[in-house]
Image (cartoon, rainbow, N blue to C red):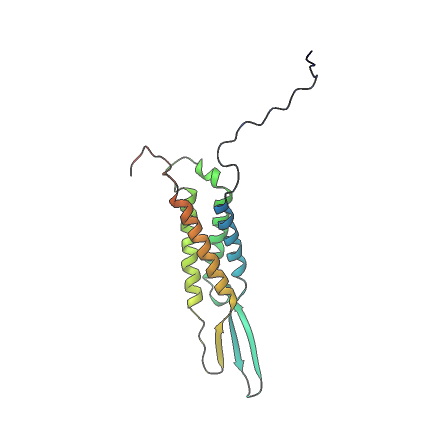
Amino acid sequence: MTETSPYPQAQPPPPQPGRTGWSGSDLVIGGALVVLLIALFLPWFSGRVQLFQSAAVSGAADGTQAHGYLWVVFVLVIVALIVLVGRDAIDRLPGNLPSAEQMLVGATGLALVLTILGLLQKPASGGLISIGWSYGGFIALLAALVAFFAAAGVASRLRPRNPGTTA
């Protein structure tokens, strides 16, 4: 004899289109972007001013203090994180837009170029002032490299959005 319940059985939710979560590559890209965002505010350059023979003052400057254009890297990282989070919505937009992966490669590539430029352009020193590198710029460079190459790896594995059309 089969018993019937007055309560309906729970049905599994219908499958959602798109991705079901972040892949390992997405986590690597997102993690590297967060590290790059933080590294922009770590000390990139250290300086020392020799006041007298026995007295000196030392300090440090982060990337955005030393080079104002590194704020563009800050904006690019925020945009890349938004694209990473909203990738499914971007892929559903009508029109001939770049894919989310192409946007990620563009944003991380430009951020990498600007990070390299910011690291190589050491502020001027001379006379009583000596300026050297600190650890923040190298962490930023490493994070930008990881984010770019991970995004490029994801983009290289994809098919075109509309395989039936030709350019």
